[in-house]
Image (cartoon, rainbow, N blue to C red; front, side, top):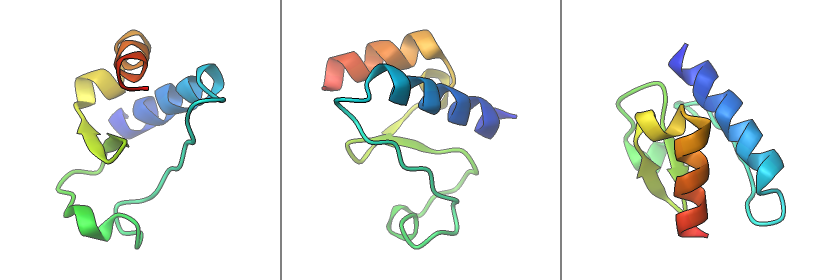
Length: 70
């Protein structure tokens, strides 16, 4: 459920910030994920920085976070 919620929030952020960010979603076993040594099934990165799951699953918090880093 957490993974699904994070994906929904990520897609919403892509709509809001479409001119400023690019959304890419990968599975934890994808070649792109290997360098990160991920331990959980839900991981969100912005500018190669891991975002806390509490932020990644909240539209309000994610919007604030993205606004602060772009």
